[in-house]
Structures are given as structure tokens and as C-alpha cells.
Length: 139
Image (cartoon, rainbow, N blue to C red; front, side, top):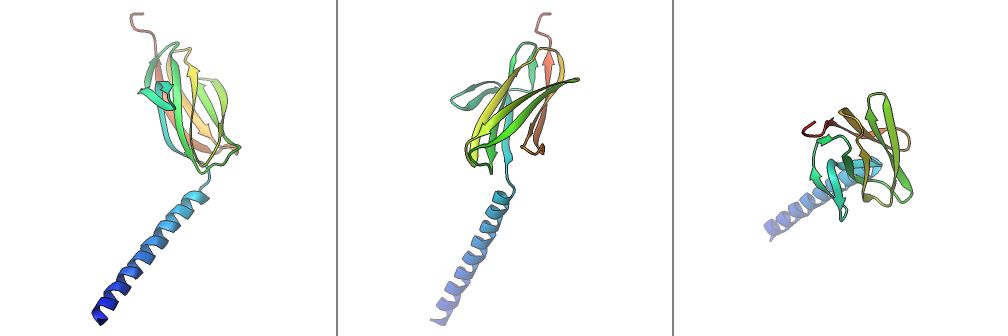
């Protein structure tokens, strides 16, 4: 009987330690604030999902940035900054909850190296991605 009690006590102790460890990880995630947990570039968004992921596009294509953001609350926002050479274009995206999918797009008007940056309201960079814009095929 004593062995059964010791086994049960050991299992309970293991459960408590594991549970506290998971809570600590969750608390750290919550304390981390706004985070971009997923980011992808592509050619379109349908039903809130990115279609046709890519890192190379042609001039005059729409480049979509799809994001999954966690740690936010209704009323928060992120700033998306599209950069090409000396040019920068800013878009604000509202966040409606702690796990939120959103997207922005930019029509690529010039060939070359581009970048897109996602920042929080304080200007902290949450994500940065680069992509290429090519001249249309056959030109």
C-alpha cells in the first residue's frame, strides 16, 4: 500500500512541476506583448489565408504580406513599412485580439530589392522580410 502511495505522490509531483513549467512559458508569452508569430509573402489572400506564397514578383504585381499576431488586444495596431531604395510606404493594420490574422499589400512599381518591416506602436521591429521584384517576363 505504501508503494502505491509513493507512486501516486511521485506522479502528482511530476504533474505539478510540469504544469508550473507550462504556466511559466505561457506567462512569458503573455508578458512578451505584441508578437508576429507567422509572416508570409504571396500573391493573394482568400478566406483570410495567403494564396501562392512567393519571394519573387514582377513589376505591377500586388505583393501581399500575411501576418498572424499574438499578444495584442483590441485597439492595438502594427505598422507595415514597404521599402525600396530611398522610398518607404507605411500602412497601419488594426489588431482585434490576442491572436489575430491580418494582411496588407503593395503594388510593386519598380524592379529591384524590396523589404517589408512590421513594427509595434513604439517602433520596435517585430518582423522584417525581403523580396525581389523582376521585370515582366518577355521584356
